[in-house]
Length: 156
Image 1 (cartoon, rainbow, N blue to C red):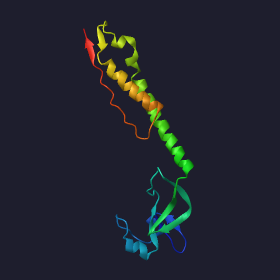
Image 2: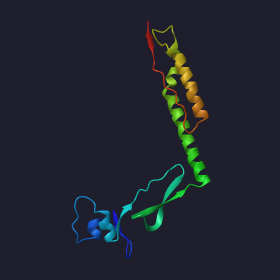
Image 3: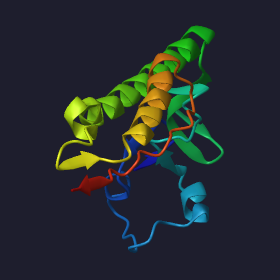
Image 4: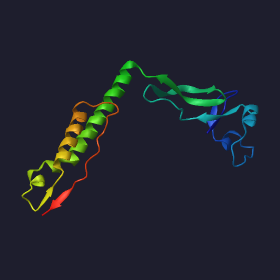
């Protein structure tokens, strides 16, 4: 998308903005855009979502030869806390999901050595699940996720 910024801001595709001009497959040069009071429209500005937010600008604006539709502003302390809380909830939920995926290892028959088939490394799963449970109860932004053990089955 492009914009003509003088005399009045108008957004559109090049063919709409300049109906009497033939354009090559590539975008026009910066010199051509400058000479015709036109600019590229940035619809997705880069910003740090942990510390900033993008909001729709009240009107398109020209900055550094680019027209922007959004303004970037710092997050308030309250917004930062909400983001932090959401991340911690997500980590806790992921840990709960991981626990549910290994619930089967807690069944008594799984590690019963008197059975014809049993899980020989049940203690590894107990250790693993304890580490995951700690993450679930005390989540951090970047937890040190343990590696899930691979089940080792013994057949008599």
